[in-house]
Image (cartoon, rainbow over all chains, first blue to last red; front, side, top):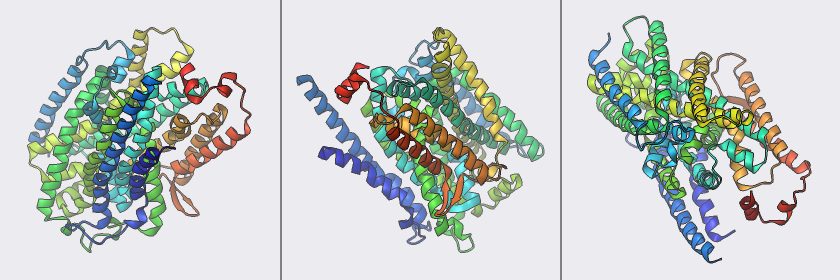
Length: 74
Length: 506
């Protein structure tokens, strides 16, 4: 397994765990504008995951272009 | 009483929508007699349109009607839809581009095509198509319920509520059947853009207007509101987490999602649009909150109670917080929010039926015959879907989607894990799939005491667990044990060649 593969796995695994493991965000305080933490934090997570997914996308793109260049010479 | 400004605005925009649907069938013209033109839009959708096509999937009656209704009735438990959306696009990034590449190389247009080739099994491929078609039936039923709810909310006062709901159901069904038959995926994609604009307009204006009227969330989440709306109780955690996981793994296994994947123009564009889709979920989060917000808007709450169903949460908030003309526009957004996805799902079903079931037995069908069959089959499937409308308690219409999820998740070993490994034996996959389906259906019946569908979770020693996850466990267990036990048939080229060469030689 290449090191970039490990990075790619983490870029998907971290957002998944942040969202999946509900016990750590299952609380009312601190509220935000009257909204319980449980609600606003989950909505915030929808935005927080985007940079992870974008990083995954561009690393993959980079991998593919170098792969196809390597492929033409072999 | 019926409000003519609301209905007028609704009908005027519906005319625009219908025009787009018909225009869509001519747009970027292809031969609509060809199945892949009708069903995959000729595979020429760039990042933006692929975004809208898959996004269309996210903003369905599930989001507008079912989730707010569940939150209204049961509280924070149904907020599981928010983390589900955040995770499902990560799952998609792992799965979709890989499927896209293999499919482009080999000319697959369905998940069944892939499985047939990879595991060399017609039985598995036909089984996959059947499960895909059946799993979509309750999901389509949910869309019909959503459309019905919008129409009924506008017609309220013209007759008693029961009659209003029956008329609304018939109208919703006719519109859906006519729309699918004429437009195909191109029409549906073009209208999906229109639908999403309306939907964002609706979400933003209603949350703005409602919060302005109420004076902020602080006036909604007050000590007098039941604790179940603030956060989960500890016993709800296993159900919550398993609903998140099961739903997140299931979404991209649906045939219409596979269609969405394969209609993208390139793997990079597919990844790029997928990366942004979780942002789209913010609107879903806000809509889920409408199920709580409604308690602070007395007029809306009265309407919801008069129908005795949480489904009316969003339409009632729209009608009670927006000026009539804008309410009409917003209601059309919710209405086509059911219509467009239902059409996309019905097209996917028809595609599977003709390509992966009928053609297996009648390989000499002409392309025109194929398309004709697909169009008529999609109409027939919608009638069957209609039957599911009657087996639920309407407030818990979300169970229709969760039922579909239990069935479709059983494709996970062959369609998703199968992309990464050839280790599974076809016999093992077939028996695992059957084990998953039958255990899932049986547990659903048990959990609901063989009555109307009100839950998709089964009580276990560690708490209630979404049945999709339990059945997937059974399915994987059967698949893995049997794959280890069944002796591998020696295929000389597979023993010697590397995996890459094997796939190239097929």
